Length: 102
Figure 1 (cartoon, rainbow, N blue to C red):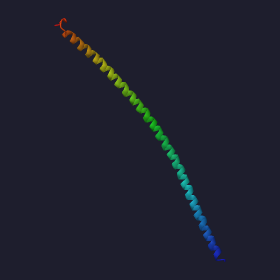
Figure 2 (cartoon, one colour; figure 1 turned 45 degrees about the vertical axis):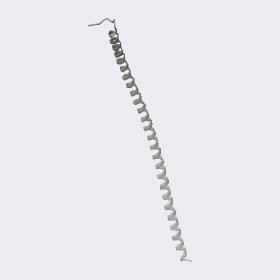
Figure 3 (cartoon, rainbow, N blue to C red; figure 1 turned 90 degrees about the horizontal axis):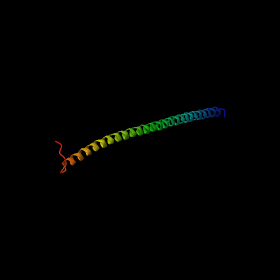
Figure 4 (cartoon, rainbow, N blue to C red; figure 1 turned 180 degrees about the horizontal axis):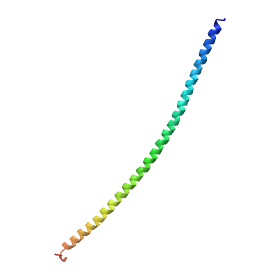
């Protein structure tokens, strides 16, 4: 019986040591998971911030493009108005009985 007690103590110490090791691993995994969750939350927040910034930039670019297109079309309209007036004047001059300007 004396011989078995020290062996049982050794076995109990091994079991306790293994439990402590497993608890330590579990704590490490929990800590890593919590850090990853924090990291994931930070990544998600940064993604949302960048997406909002990109959407604002895109809206600004669209607004600028619309303004430029409006300006170009207004200038084109003015040129076409002048051109139409020139064509109408030319047609009037070519009508029979119109005074000829030489």
